Amino acid sequence: MAALTMRNVVKRFGDVETIHGVDLDIRHKEFVVFVGPSGCGKTTLLRLIAGLESITEGDLHIGDTRANDIDASERGVAMVFQSYALYPHMSVAQNMGFGLKMSGMPAGEVRKRVDHAAQTLQLEALLDRKPKHLSGGQRQRVAIGRAIVRQPEVFLFDEPLSNLDAELRVEMRVQLQELHHKLDATMIYVTHDQVEAMTMADKIVVLRDGVIQQVGAPLELYERPCNSFVAGFIGSPRMNFIDGAVSEVGEQRLIIKLADQDQTSVVLDRTPQRPVAPGDSVSVGVRPEHLHEGHEGDTVIRVAVDVTERLGNVTFIYGRFANLERFVIQADALSPTQSGDDATVSFDTASSHVFDADGQPIL
Ligand code: ATP
Image (cartoon, rainbow, N blue to C red; front, side, top):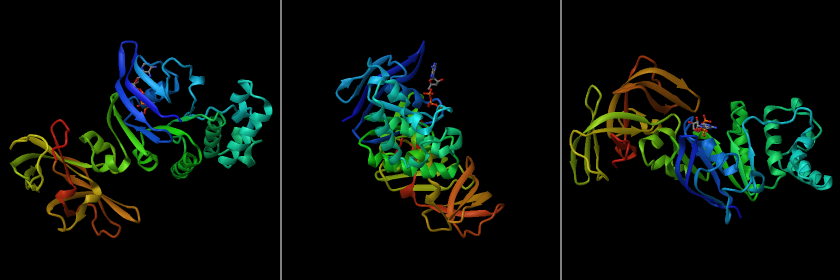
């Protein structure tokens, strides 16, 4: 059983603190994804767990054992890197078994584990090939195989799919989830791609500047983001944030005037969770799929359309509205709207979010 906990974990490189007191609980066999923009500390956090960096302050437990001072090779974790780092002169089987052989494991046992991993990853037919005769996806599977043969309790993946083309990434996402079902192991996966996070994770950890913003199931984060950063980061295309100001506050009622030419009113029949007063700056968050062409919704706006993207099953309309130069609407596949149009668009206030000037949710 490999549950994993971090308590007040701090990492400093010299004088520079990059991880600022992280608390995290990961259950046995959970698939956890760390996401966040470049430089937020995802890889550092993973390397602290792997034992490739030392923890400056705080505690890391893997299972019941405090792991801070345990050597990387003794932690029961295996890491799969973005660059597959395969040995070019070795066959697939030799690449997968090399670490075990170096640790002194008898050749028969190494072969057994390599065969088993090859079967799990459908690499049996490729065991004698050299890496240069493999596709990118096959190389990545060999790199994963090298981790599997060690039979770790925790797998750590550092952006393992970023060198693959789009189609192969989708395929590998599915394969990694299948692998997770087959293996009795915890998986921690780093990516800056929120689609990977949404599709694979049991639990997503959103990081920003070395601080955890929110931890939760994908749809929980999507529907109830704890601040405007998470709201903007989770979801593709991203949420539209429209500037506005509070014009009326009452029991079970908040009226906001948007900063568009028409000063459109947004009437929300909900009680604010935080104190707000008329005149306060806010931003109204509306996801592209919650906008409809036409008057169906209760808030109607006019959008100056710049570009339409027709994907077959859906059309994305990009235009300008209020403060936004890139206002995005997810419209029907057959939407007649074209660039240069002034589109009538509406949304239901029930599906909109409102954040205060600090990015905290008001409703
Ligand atoms: P990316 O998605 O670009 O890989 P990340 O979220 O994984 O980013 P990290 O690589 O963990 O971010 O880096 C977090 C911060 O720590 C950055 O500011 C980075 O410059 C700093 N950092 C990472 N490794 C070191 C190091 N060895 N020495 C000094 N600073 C470091």
